[in-house]
Length: 536
Image (cartoon, rainbow, N blue to C red; front, top):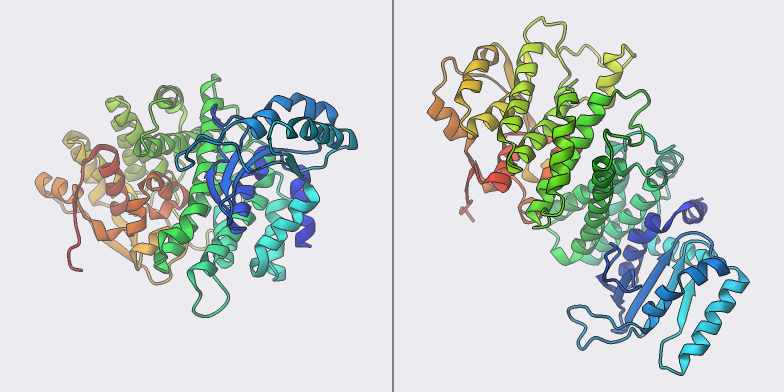
């Protein structure tokens, strides 16, 4: 069954659909990936460059689908650059031609296409240019299955869950909780006292499963859902690394590949959104209304900007992000507290982009909406952040959504986060105006049982903290509390991989807490003082 899934995936996969998985495959097989699979203008025909276990330099050109003679003729210049061009990469000194060059296709070559490559190799042999080896679908499928090894999804339930992903039409949102459940089990070695190599193999296997599961959304060019899939994997990798105290060498290669795939998908989303007058992206759920779609897309684009800024790569996207956020700002709509991470991401990005008033008014509008809607006995109370956008939309439309005996009036999970956000920016008037409504609500925040659980979809040992806002409240005390946190409140790997932090609460909205919101403000605008834990 699994072999058929892999083969069918390769049949349908375009070049982008399998390039990240192939890079992971090479890593599992002992290669050190030097470059790829992200495309850039200086690759010179080489999508991926590696050093294998024998320290041989390998260069790969990847193509999707079957290749006939006409296809090979179109890429003959790329093949020449692949074989004859020198590799100029830090650590490859002096620059030199690869020892091996390979054309990898997710389909098959026709006999005339194979003959053309054979003639190409024969003509270049005298010039000392290495021959182009061809890897086709049958070989690829066998290698992918072998790479999974003991980490193959063998239980009927696991195979069934994978098939649910694979048979999806790719039009709707990516099912993040289901994905996390699938890959978390895959990552954990089955034997007692596992080694770092066992964890590395499990993490690599989870990356391959993610590639298979994401295929329907990739084919639909549903860039947002594809990004969510790869970011979900990043989150799971960080969680496993933290909980098992893994050294970076065990998990970093897979994390970097997954994060690069997410960045590529978000860049495509931004380019598409900025090139049009509105958001003409694939439907995220059947019947989804435009205002919620706008909030989803803009939340991720805002997080993308903040993340790229942390990486020092934001300068070439700032104008496009600003354009989309300002254009869509009047249309965004909140239907549940799961929107809070998106609102704060958009508000923070607008602030950093110089649109201070727009960002602050947007967050204040959200705070007022929650404070008003969720008053005691209000018929308009909105669901807490444990309810997805999709469930909230169905509920708004009157659909039968299972919310057993839940009452949302009288409580607010994210209002205090929004008020602290405003307080850190000195917006005393806005906070004062909302404080009477705030004091009539019970404020709530789920506190994970450990810092590592911020990265987990589930935490049975965590505690729900509930409190009433002081009436009256000291502005000095409020701002001092809003501007301080301890480094130890969040896992160390999350600080070290700070480029992931803007995405965390978008994936898991109930992980937007005072701590994660403060950490984001520290990274984005240095508005929070971080106290170091020196107890160790």
